[in-house]
Length: 381
Image (cartoon, rainbow, N blue to C red; front, side):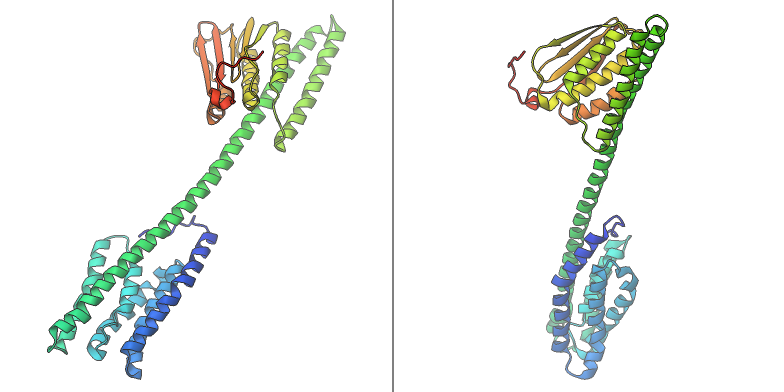
C-alpha cells in the first residue's frame, strides 16, 4: 500500500475521513463492545481484553486521518500482548480481534517485504491460538477450530478487505490528482492561447507600423499630404491595437475574416505586392476566426521574411490557402507564430500545412467538412 500523496487535497481527505468515521467507525466500536461482552466474565477479564479492543479502534480512527504511522507500533504491541493473554488466562477466542485490526491496517506502512509481513501476521494469529492446547488438551478439535482456524481465516478476510479499501482510496486519489492536472493544463493552455493572441496583435501591428513609418519618411519631402495620411493611418492602427489588447485582456476579442482580408490587401499593395483573392465559397462562421488568424500571421511573415511580388489568397467553405513568391532562403524559416497556430488549428480538428518549393511558399489551413457544418459540394459565391 502506498502513502497518500501530499497533492491529495485537504478537502478530499476531509470528506473521505468523515465518510469513514460515519459509515465504518460505529460498526468497529460496536464489534469491540460485543466481543468484550461475550468473552469477559469478570472485571479483570475486561482489564485484560479492553486494551486490545481500544488499540484496534484507535488504529482505525488514525487510519482514516492518514496518521496511522504515529500509533501503529504501540497499538500493534498492545494488541499482540492481549491475544496470548486472552488465550491462556481467559480462554477468549476473540482476543485476536485487536491484533487483527491493527495488523491489517499497519500493512500500509510496510514498504518492503510485505509478503513476509503478511505471513508473519497470519502465522502469529494461528500460532498463539494453538498455544491454547497447553491448557485445554482434552478437546483438540474444538481448540483448533475456535482458536486457530476461525481467527486465522477471519484475519485473512479482514486483511483482504482492508487492502481492497486502500486500493479504493488510491483510485479516488488518482482521480483527484487527474482532475488537478487537467485544471493545471487548462491554465497552461489558456496562457499559451493568450500569448499567441497577443503575439498576433502586437507583432503584426509593430511590423505594419514600421512599414508605414518608412513609407512616410520617403514621402515626407516630396508628398507631405501622402506622408500625413500614412502617419494618421499609423496613429489609427496603434489606437486600434490598444483597443484589441484591452478586448483580449477581457476575453472580448473576435477576429473578422473579411476585415483581415481587406487589411492584408492594403498592406500588400502598400508594399508593392500584387494580391489576388479568390472566394470559392462563403466561409463558415465557426472556422472564420481561426482562418483569419492564419491569414494575419501569414501576412506578417510574408512582409517580414519574403521579397514577394505577388500573393494568391484562396478561400473555401472550410479552408484558406496563401501562396507567395519571393522566397530566397533554401530552407523554410522558423515561423514560431505559425507553429503555435498549428496546435490551435489541430485542437479544433483542422490541419495547418506550411510548404516551400523553389521560390514559392504555401500556407494552408483546412478543416474537415463536418467541422464546417456544411455538406461537401455545396457552393456559395
